[in-house]
Every structure is written in C-alpha cells, then in structure tokens.
Image (cartoon, rainbow, N blue to C red; front, side, top):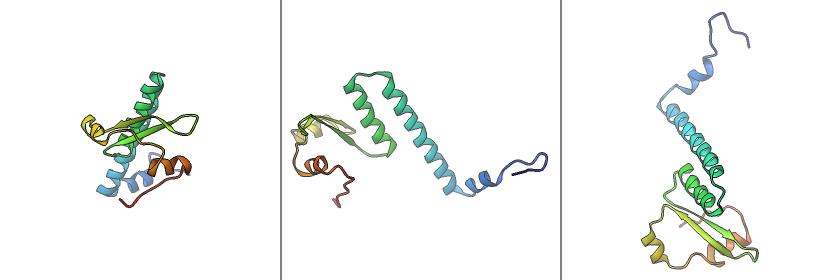
Length: 120
C-alpha cells in the first residue's frame, strides 16, 4: 500500500475508534493481553509446583473475569490428588467439606475431558 507524503495509514485505527463500544473492546483486549503476560511472567518466576498452580488458577480467574476458579490435579491412578481454588473464601471451603472426588461432574470431566457447561 502506498501513501501520499505525510499521510498515515489511519483507516484501520479510525475504524477501531468509531464509537464507545469499539474503545471498550480495544481496552478489554489490551487488559486481557496484560493479564496473560502477567500470568506467563509470574508462572516462570517461582518453579515450586504449588506456587505455579496457584498462580495459574488466579490468572485464569482474572483473565476471564470469573468470581472464582479451581484446578484439580490428577494422580497417576486418575483420581484427584490436589485441588486448588481462587476466589473462594476459607469459610465456604470449610462448609463444602472434602475436595471433589472422582464422581459427579468432576468424575465426568476426568473420564471425558471436554468443555462442560451445565445449565445450572
């Protein structure tokens, strides 16, 4: 593409800034990129497994703007050996009781690791 002297390729930028919705989308994309980069940098700064997994859960929650998140670590036998959460208060965890087992929805996800979006 050739531009006249002094002319800048403004067309694409102008399209992005046409209205408040586009500005919001650009800012949202920028924020997600920053969160992703922060997650990558934080994950590589301490290689202790519990610390890294905790950072992954917190970064994922932040990245998708979720109220909470969890990560189950499977053992060699396919059962949940470790369960990490983010955004869930200790009191709530205590009321729930034991961490998920290999039954119900967690069991289904272990046997069929595909996205699952229950209605409730």
